[in-house]
Image 1 (tube, helix red, strand yellow):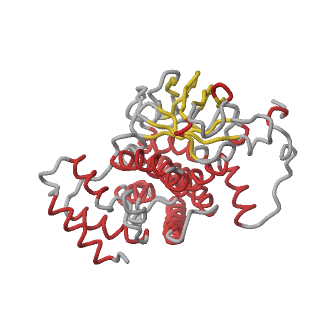
Image 2 (cartoon, helix red, strand yellow):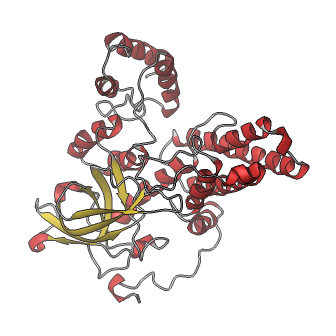
Length: 400
């Protein structure tokens, strides 16, 4: 049984064999993965040691103290938080060996081809088609030909791989006719177009798929069971967005508190009361996220992650709104409206105007707040589900 002392010993051995000061960054990250210290709760040989998830903090603290390089999780968050747990649960041995190591080291960036122009909140209504070449049977080793359009795709302009859901059987109800694939973003027929946002940047993208050929070996899960596979991705996504570990006064509430302390001339009683309320709510959300991560040590995340993502979106919007109001005319400044395609989102390193504008997307990305409220109501609180008239209707017969 791997314990904290064993992990410290293994970490010391890694540092002795690959001193951070003299080892090239990628070489160190590969060695860390091979030593099982990437994500200790993963199986041996796949970057882990079958250890409790909670012990990852022991490794991280030792490596941070030694000045070891990180794998830039902000840049590869979709791979780490969404693709990896899905591949681990549903992937073949070959898929795990091929994808997990370069995913964790950041050699290969991932994106998520889920939402469509006509299937955002109603994701199961997606229309992107994957047709078996020559009508072959699953497992025959042939290819799938994919046509369709995806939208709101973060990091598509950087990605080597994508997790993709597509309709493989239009003759059954919408949730049952979907399959899950790994798509090579460099293949012919994949076109990525920037989608400019209110911030002026194009962190999101539209992706057009025209005759894209995907081998059956890049399918995750059984044909027609893509919705089941996608649920693992979505639940992990919501935890990744709303339940990230941070210290007290971390994130946006820390920036707001620093502004308050630095600008006493702008303080008012009303703004003080509102900041105190937001501070308490942010701390409650932080501690709730810690409890959720402890629950995850016993298995896959559940629907509670939807509640965390809801809280994150609301707090980000309210805190950024408070900050703009507090800073008055300084809160309205914005550094650069140039259309750029950034590597990620920086909620704490930019000015208040950027945070205010970018936070508007938090209640859309990763599941809209309206949909997440339904999930919390039905799956956490046990309330009756909303009436559905399309439950037993084939997707091809649904009105559009």
